[in-house]
Amino acid sequence: MTHRRLTRYRWHLLDAVQLAAIALIALALTPVLGHLLTLQSRLQMQPSDYMVVQQLDRSVLVVGVLGLLALAGVLVHAFLVRGNARAFSWSIVAACGLSVAQVIFWSIAVPMHALTGGWTVASEEFESARQNWEYAIALAGAATFGALLALARAIEASRPIASLAILDSIERDAAVRLARREARQLGSDEKAQRDAAA
Image 1 (cartoon, rainbow, N blue to C red):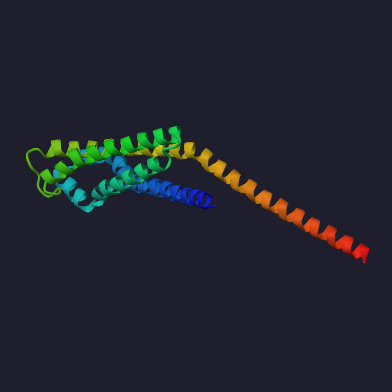
Image 2 (image 1 turned 120 degrees about the vertical axis):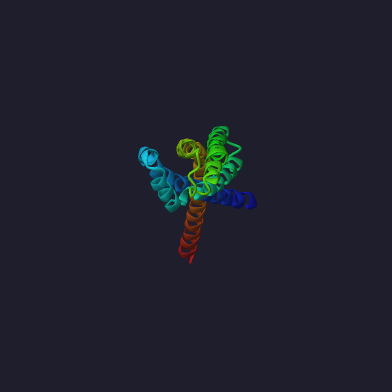
């Protein structure tokens, strides 16, 4: 009984982790999509206009933090599905994609942000910094999107196990209903025999 209860709680935990990981990756991708849609326009802006736009757009640093949280969620997912080789493998692929995105973000984009003083100073390396920043965000976004697709495959691969647990629960419920029906039938047969004897 305790094992079944723990198994049920494990599936609820797995569902919660899967939902949280998807939500975190989606939130991390949202500003990146807007960034990608305006990439060419941003690269053609005058330095002064570009710095104004960059100062208005503070969401990109949040992307890095959301990416770290998403990576943690995917690693927890990998731990929970470690018994299923296919789901575990896809979870590791998702974790690798998020790790690549984080390396790109923190090793290329953030130093460019620091080099320009949070996009307040136009240094002599401004054009190089702008291109490094823009392409780093785009590459990190592509890696994050790939991680989302891999996580979707991991979740899909983990569902047959969940389906087996659900089937087991349905069979138990059916067995309980059958036993109750037989007990009622037996009780009504005994009552009919008593009534006939009286």
